[in-house]
Image (cartoon, rainbow, N blue to C red; front, side, top):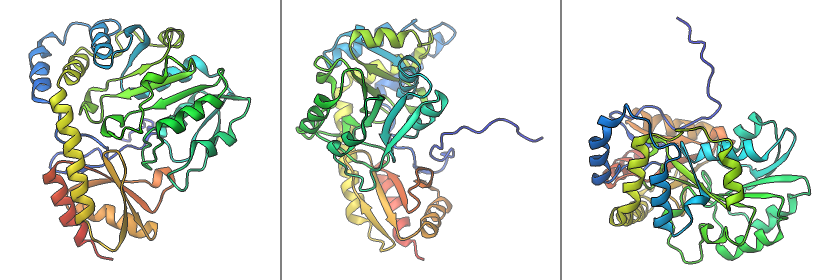
Length: 351
């Protein structure tokens, strides 16, 4: 029977994972903390009961963990649902929105869904300056989406640069700072934007439990902004939009500081190992501050051959052709065992 189901516009990492080393979706391959798994098992028996309407217990835990006001937080089924609420609440057809050319695909997909006009900043050098992006902002710009660090390019900007940028943006233009990978960065010059919300009424922070917290399969994320913005977003939030199990898992993840620090250390150690031991002349390695690296090839044919070669050897990586980066592959940093296998196989690739 022919499958007439429409295809999703978003191109994710490989769907296969059983029996594979999965390095295609920037997940934490160590999985959730043991205490998180234990609580999930304990609470499965309550799966017949609806979750809290707005996830109040998790809101309170986020507020406690980050020393912020719970009334200024909104939960989403992944941070991408928060992005959808932002478009719904603050954009109208033909409104101008700005993001970089190689930004998270959902910015573009939602812009199309909400019939916004997109103005792209060409971040072809990957490490761009916010001052350069500022040159394309106009009086018509309604929302600016910035990921810091950015996926898939790994570009990053620091606190001083961010503050200078925000100071030049008019208050009627919203700035959405997507900090999905911020936990991986311990550089004191970096800022996740959380403390800047009190000074900038047009700033919205989005965060995710899908990356370092290893809860991608449970779909849980959140947004933080001033109370007025959050109140407007709540008008577009579905009741019970996040599950009971995802909220319980996220709460426990935040409490387990030791596990978070171990995850940060594991990523750093395994990334260093990978960058040192990958020595195939077919590609150039581009390091990032997040939990992935980029591999740059001479042309798109060799790039796809590499992806196929790894797949034959039960390893999935992400081709960036859907982003227009036909000569690039993104490789997530997995466990030490994952990376040793990936290094061994990648070094055998020959064209």
